[in-house]
Length: 87
Image (tube, rainbow, N blue to C red):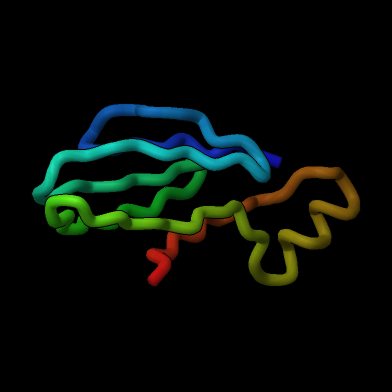
C-alpha cells in the first residue's frame, strides 16, 4: 500500500502510512491541505477559526475494474486519493 504525503500550506509535514494518523495545531486563518500518493493528488482549502478543530479522512482507494485486477494479480495497483472533511 502506498503512503500518503501530507502537505499543509505548501510544506510537507509527514508521510502517512496505512492505518496511521497525523495531528497538528494550526493558527486561525485560511489553510491548504494537499494529499498525494505521487500518482494522484487532492487538495482542499479551509478556513480555521480560533480554537476550532477540523478533521479530515484520507485514503488510497482502488477504483474501477483495472485496479482490483492489478492488485490481485500483481499485488500493486493504481490507487487514487480520497480526501473527505469530517463533520
